[in-house]
Image (cartoon, rainbow, N blue to C red; front, top):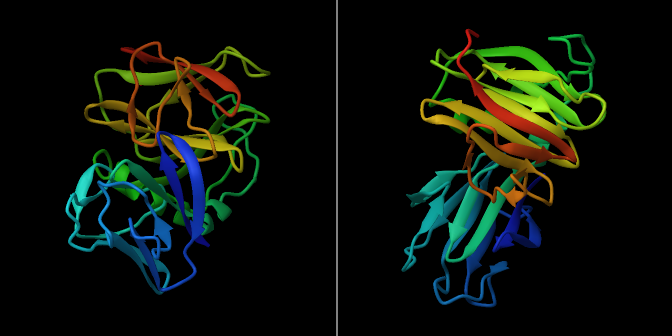
Amino acid sequence: MAKLILYLDNAILSEFFLKKELTTIGRRPNNVIHMDNLAVSGEHAVVVKKGNDFYVEDLGSTNGTTVNGQEIKNHLLRHGDVVEIGKYQLKFIDEEVLSHIGTEQVEHAGFEKTVMVHPSALHAFERQAKETANQVFDTTASLDKSHTETLAPVAAISSPTVGKVQVLNGPSAGRELVLNKALTTLGKVGVQVAVITKRASGYFITHVEGKAYPLVNDVSTGAQAFALKDHDVIEIAGVKMEFYLDAAKQ
């Protein structure tokens, strides 16, 4: 089932399951999602259910509607998209995508546990991957036996440097993961999940699932993609990892 999670100042206010064909958003109290802010129009936007797809449409609002930082009129929502209206954020969650993540264990790259991810789960991250790769593979790796799962679904991209993360705590402390794929998903399903994307402009971490955002240097990343810098310390699902850039060959 799909839902929208309403945020204000990085705090979760409510969740709205998208069961109806129309989910109205606006400042007037009769809206399904009521936003009491002057930057929000009376009838600001609507989410339309068409089969298994959901579209957000701006209703000619004064201040507009953005999705992932881009102003839109009509947009097909994908898992993880963030709709911004006034000071509010609405994160689109497709629980069907998350349900495809399985638990088949294999040995890979010296790590203790991996998960195989159903190919349909890749669709959730299609938008981020377009910048960096076109081919999809079904390889996986992981950082931590009980807390960290890693998806590396897209072909490697040539770059003068390659990003890596090294685990700083827990049973896998000291182990490294090379971020030589376009997408690497870290975390514990049902607790906290984030994706690190490799783009032409660098590495970015984006929150995918969980009530709390990932931390970078003890600061919340927020809902949008967060640029990583050399030697940043990432914390996801209780696991701390140091991100660093390595000029060595991949």
